[in-house]
Amino acid sequence: MVPCPILMNPTLAITPKMVILSRRYQVLATMKKSWFLILFLVCMDMWGQDFKENAIPLDTDASLDLLIANAGDKKLVLLGEASHGTHEYYYWRDRISRRLISEHQFNFIAVEGDFASLYKLNEYVKNKPGAASSAQEVLEELERWPVWMWSNEETVALAEWLRTYNDGLPEADKIGFYGMDVYDEWESKREVLRLLESQDEAVQKYIQSQYDCFHPYKGFSWEYARAVNLGRPDCATTTKNVVDFIRNNRQQFEQLSDDEYFYLLQNAAVVHNAEAFYRESVTLQGPESWNSRVFHMHATVNDLLTLYGENAKGIVWAHNTHVGDAAYTSMRNTGEKNIGQLSREKWGAENVFLVGLTTYKGTVMAGREWGAPMQKMNIPKAIKGSVEAAMNKTGLPTFYVLFSEEDRKEKNLKVMGHRAVGVVYNPRNDRRQFVPSLVSLRYDALLFFAETNALKVLK
Image (cartoon, rainbow, N blue to C red; front, top):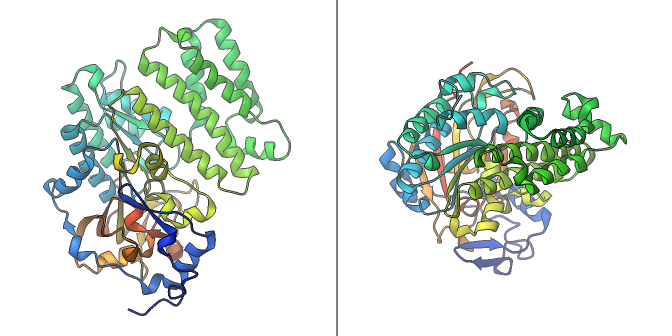
C-alpha cells in the first residue's frame, strides 16, 4: 500500500490523543473541521479495507441469525439504505424487521415518510375501524412526491405481513407503522382541525386563530418561507402555541383514545417543526434546516417509545445519511447531526444498533430534480477507494459484516467514501455521491449487494 503523505504528518494524523474509549465504542474527541475532508480527498484512493475475512454471506432469512442475535436486545434498531429507490434495501429491511418483531418483541416501525398519510397504513395493519381494505389501497392514494418511496410492492408485502401478524395479537400489543418525517405539513394542519370538530367551540376557535397565520400562503410552504425572509412575520410562536395547548390540556381531549390523542399531537408537531424547517432553509445558511428535520424525526421516534410504554423497542427505516452516526462522517464538519448519532447519545450506544445497506452498482428509481417524473436510472460502479469498491473485491454477491472492537481500534480506522443516492439523482454526478466515513464507527453492521435493482412501484 502506498503511504499517505498527510497521514505521515503527525500534526494532521488521527492520533491517540484524538481518540477516547467510551463504553464499547471509540469516539473521536476532537478533530478540526477541515482535517476530515482533507484526509478523505488525499487518501481515499490509497485506502481500502479487507472485508472478506469477516463477510457473512446473505441469501436466506437464516443468514441473518448473527445480525438478529446482536440487534435483538436493543431499544432501537435503525436500518439504512444507500438510496430511496432500491428493491434489495426494502426487501432485506423487511426480513430483518419481521424477525425483530416476531422473535424479540419490537413494537413499531418508524419510516422516513409523511406522518398523516402513512398513519392510514398504521390503521390498516392494526385493523382499526374504518381502515382501508388493503395496504395497496392506502399506498396507491399517496400523492406527495416522491410517491415511489412508499407506493411500491415491497411496502405492500411488509404491511400485509404486519396485518396478518397483528390479527393474532390483543389490541394493546399490535405492531405500529408510522411516518416520522416533517413533510406534508398542510395535510397535518387539516387533520388537526378535523379532529377538533368535535371539541368545545372555544378550543376550535383558539387553534384556528393560531393557524390563521398561514392563511396568506394557502398551502405553499416555500412561498411562506420566502415571505418571512423578506420581512413578513413568521408563524413559529403560533404553531408552538398549538402544540403546547394540546400537550398541556389532555383533559380537553378526554373523548380521544391514547392513539387518537397521539395522532392529534403529532400532527400539530409536524406543522410546528415544518414551519421551522422551511423558514430556516431559506433564511439561514448553516445546518439549521437539516438539523430541524432530524430533530423532528428523532423526537417522533422517542415519542413512539413513550407511547408504547417503558420497555418499548422500535425499528427505524431511513437513508444511511440519517442512520449511520454522523459524528463519524464529513457531516460533522458542517455541524449536521442525524438520528443515529442522536439515538446513541440519548440511549447509549449499547442500546442502539445501526445498520447500513449499500451497493456497488445497479438500477434505482429517482428523479432528475425535485418534483421531476420518476425514472429508472443506472447506478455506476462505485469509485475506487470507496467502501463499496472494497466490499466488491470480496467477490461475494451479497453479504454483511458485523463491526467488532478490533475494527474500531485506532490502527484500523479507515476514512473511505460511502455511497449516498437521494431521491434527486444524476448518474453523471455519481462521483459526488460518496460521504467520507469511518464506516466501522458509523455503523454496527453493513449489508452489501454487488448489484441492486429498482423498486417495484405501484403506479
